[in-house]
Length: 586
Image (cartoon, rainbow, N blue to C red; front, side, top):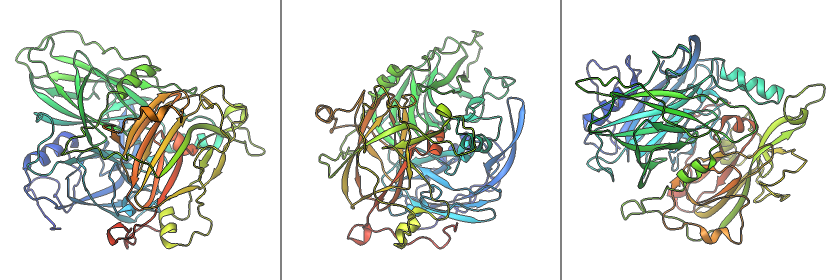
């Protein structure tokens, strides 16, 4: 590939040598620059520099020091085109160990760049650097990047926008403008202290103090009217909103007063367009929507708002974040702003109705290559559980125990002195992991009925080994143990097809007959329905070690995770290359 160097006099970044922090808000500026320069070169290498550094930020009338990339919160977009190679050089200037995940990137034969700490790499230690190097193959759309160690992604995150090949149009009307919309959670407390305390006491963590849109909490929170995201639009235009849920622990409903959306993409895969007045988006998911503004709006400004969807038994941040849609009009219409009516926090029927609308384009240009037959079938329960309280300690979990979470009742234990991928690749396991993760629950029960009295989980670093190119089906079954709730399950290194969903217990005799094997939605993160199940299929064509986990950070911390080991194929292009020379050491 050719290496391109473009420097713009007076602008604070260079295209391929680095993308330094802009002194003005990065979202619209950075995206505008890349969209309008009109690069004609395909398959270039784009270099970015990430300096992880501390920065003081004030929200809700409180100033605290947070971790940032290049001093920005949220972080600036990483922008590339389909077919490009991206090299992001990360240097750690803080005392925390860090690692970064490029959420949704397939990482074909580049698993060393995937990012989850102690899975594909040891974290980057203070004063150290690592260059994440990967190509973008067969993907275009909205993804995102975030830290993948402990709860650091609370402030270390940003958009990852993949433009189509040059001179390739979208399969929908060209928008007037494109705008990233990142949902986040703001904690007045240090999030590392929050999860540290929870893991020590065994109880649930303290919840966030606010939700944010592009880092801003908005007028419904204390002293935050001046920290409100405003989307300025012109009448009669179409805007592409690139929506990302970067919340730590909350799914969200989102509306704009008196406006509707056309959904055109999910997790960087085009979908059959559908109209809706509400968006449901889980942590880890991205959704692209077209917003067509009114030709003759009844007011100059309209509220946009997001609130949580939650069905569990614990506490949650039951607040609402608001932003403003502001029309550019010659005369202001002084109409009082009204918050759009959002569903109740436990409106599972709204979530199910929204989720059921997603279908792949399944067109000649964008086919849905759904595995029609399956080599390996798995049935994974996902849910909560408990570990016993250590001796001489008082715990705040269920009945004096410690909260845990598991898949097939195995609460995954991360290694902390070596990464799984390095261990696997070297061929020297030495007991770091086992390959006996159960294909189905060892003790079946009525998963969504009356929960069993014994909620104890087992603990271990268990994996599943898959032969190269195997077709895989996984049924993900929620349980009612310590409360049924939706779980956004994310698979690294792959997209998968959501071939079926339902409520109650999955019926292996009846439910597969209803699977959609023609145009199911293709995603990297699926919301397993609260008190229900989701069935996914994928082809294991990417060798390496691939994390699969709930994208609620609290459930990830409690162990709701596992790893797939996909073996090399027989051909040279089917084998994972050796690690890069700068791969961090533990």
